[in-house]
Amino acid sequence: MASPRVQGYPVLIIGAGRGGVALLELFLEDPMVQVVAMADKESDAPGLELARKHGIPAFTDVVEAIRACKGYPDCIVYNLTHDDTIADEAFKVFGDKRVANGPEVKLFWQMVTNLKQIKGDLEKSQLQLQAIIYNVMDGIITINELGAIQGFNPASEQIFGYTQQEVLGNNLKMLMPEPNRSAHDLYLSRYLHTGHGRILGVRGREVTAMRKNGEEFPMELSASEMILGGQRYFIGIVRDITDRKRAEEKIAHLAHYDYLTDLPNRALFLDILDHSISLAKRSKIKLAVMFLDLDGFKKINDTLGHGAGDLLLKGVAQRLKETIRESDSVARVGGDEFILVLDDVGTEENAAQVAKKIIAELSVPFDLQGKTSRVGASIGISIFPDDANDSVNLVKRADTAMYLAKQSGKNTCRFYREVLPEGAG
Image (cartoon, rainbow, N blue to C red; front, side, top):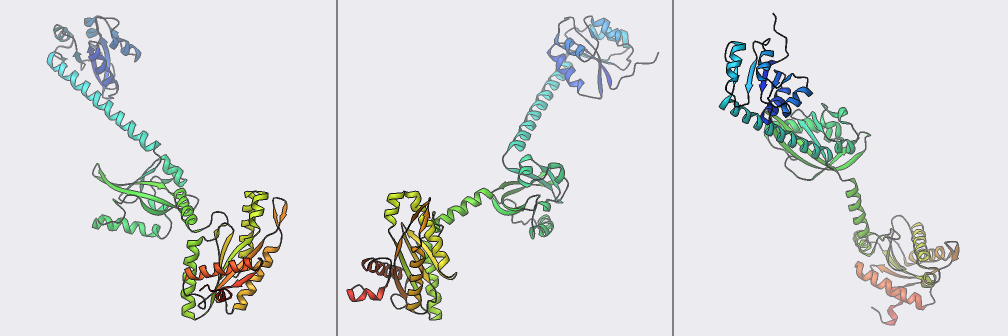
């Protein structure tokens, strides 16, 4: 009679306790083994329940189980009980010893238990690692030594706009703009031959990357190398720093520009003035510094509120920018005070004409939240090099001239030279 066909090596397990369950679970995962029966004197043994669940014949009579496996002449019996007579029963059926029992079964069971523990720990570690990779906020990209992308986690998908399927197997340079794209293969080849690189091992290096839609963006890259299975791989941890760069630019801007009018502040204006003075010295030309203080601003601020006052200051800044040349500069230095520098002004008369034009422009009523309001401007003027040779004194003397304009009836301009007869010098 032909032996029943099985997909793996036939096995009979005797003993359905904890060891039997562990052995059965191990064999269920092994395609080279097929458990053809399981036996235990206790009908509620956990191994028997597991065997029935998987369609494996379960017996409470060991002898009956051995005889039931007679059709499998190559069957191996694993005896996990302390009954040494089982070997004799197996000999009667199979004709030779095919029973593993006693110390060897205990050793085998310990090996199975340890293997299952190791396997469980490995699976747990693998799941934890996958969870970290798939849930981490940073992109994690793995490439081989040819530059082909091997790993691309969900964060990378969000950063670059590509799905994992779109990038796997493609060269990493698809994520780079020029000129880095063209230089990447050469850089990788040079590193593989010389071991010298400027990116590997550098944490948080700022580079420019490119999204699927062609948009370039700033990215922070930390790259490292690893050998796995005899193969060399490179891992890059990437972070889109667009928001951070914008915040840094905003902070830098606020350090040099007035938050309300977006005009240069005093510090930046003095730098601009220093540069203008240097050009004027080399070219032997004159420049004018104007210190402007609004007339009537406090009244508007007090009666209409700070919101209206802010609108007025924005309107004044806009009119000043529209009145002067592109080569000239204007800054807000606090409250309702503004400073201007007119490069290559030529004569005092030219400076006076600009000042009068500014006063005329500012005299046009402002619409502040539906209410018409008027302001004036008192302007003091100092001339380089006649009144001073440095930025600090030019501003100081224009400020002094501005107070003379205030004393002269406001809404007018005065030069620093007009202060001199009064003893300021």
